Amino acid sequence: MSAPTHADLVVHGGTVVNVGGSGPATVVVSGGRIVAVQDPSLPLPPHDRAVDATGSLVIPGGVDPHCHIGQRLGEYAQLDDYESASIAALWGGTTTVIDFAIPDPGQRPIDAVHERRKLAEISRCDTALHGCVIDWDDSTPAQIAEMANAGVRTIKLFTTYKDVVMAGPDTVLEVLRTLHAQGGIAYVHAEANHVIEDAQALAVAAGEAAAGHMPRTRPELAEASAVSQVLATAEHVDAPVYFVHQTTAEAVDLVRAARRRGVRAYTETCPHYLYLDERTYSSEHPERFVCCPPLRAPETVAALRARALVGDIDTLGSDHCCYSTSQKTEHSHDVRVMPNGLPGVETRLAVTFTQLVVRGGMPVERFVGMFATNPARLNGLTTKGVIAAGHDADLVVVDPGARRSARSGDLHMATDYTPYEGEELAGWPTVVVGGGRVVLDADGFHDPGPVGRALEADPMPDHLIT
Image (cartoon, rainbow, N blue to C red; front, side):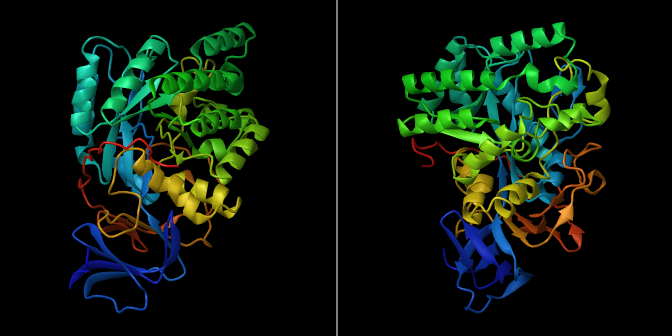
């Protein structure tokens, strides 16, 4: 694709970062797409606007593969919608969010997809969806095909939350096999439900079911057990599988070992599992940190971080869930009934850039893979996650030397707290370009209105990433 005679936008002076390498370059944008990445010694083409990124990194707009936006869990409704969540995402350098279409009781999975897409029409950034299958019946294969034809080729499966969203092992097997035939991949929340139910019963009997005791109610071995079982199923049916929010090195190692055997298995972790640990459950507000799986012991966190640094983790998903402190406090005496999840779509970049690149020394090219490129590839979003001609003009400018403390009052998520309150973080965006529009710069946020597109996933090849 050749550069136009007149560009909408040029981003110059910065170091452009992709998975395959980085270096000084000028990014030329027109019509919402990158039309050229040119040698910085060349003169800038005529343009409407220029962004000077001197001294900064220019990375692909983030793709968050794991968001829960405005969903309801029993009596608890998350406090955001696609407008507020997408604005927060853009503030944090994420230009594409992927939500879950989890069906209500009695609702068909394909109808949940249509409902979510309608809600997403107010989004300020591009959106995509994961479907969800809970029960298998004679209509399910046709619904999976219908979802795939509608551009939804990832389906969430839960191996826990019995009588709510849990899919039994037979359903897991059938979905893995059927979805693969449609060019898709299953996303699995892997925890062994029978272990969790027993651990929770023991905690209740011991009077230790409150938020401060969260780790004992969902032990590490529940995760490893379920990962092993799902990997065996994926290997049996020769289908790819993606594990969401892995929290332990043991679980990650199981996936890597399976990959060496030829299983197409992939690992996601979340910022909070790399940055926080179970000592937060001894804080003044332990309920604020209740999530599933829970935060782990410091040594477990260190081992997980080590796996990330050597490239054993493929993606970073926020697992964004926007609840308030009051919602979490209401039933904090019993983790079985309180809402789980942490707000994080806005802080995903800063938290992980700080922990992995600044403190851990991760090459920024590898980081970009986890933050943008791999999530795009693993969701069939072929125009996302790369700074190259023909790709969407989603760009983030980051001053790697700048630092700012996280304060809930300075953030834009629809809640009253951040798990990272007071933490000094690097990696905050100085400029964000979404779909060719500058939505964040030194003058603040420029609301583009409901311009976010509902993205459709392309069929995914057998080997998405190595």
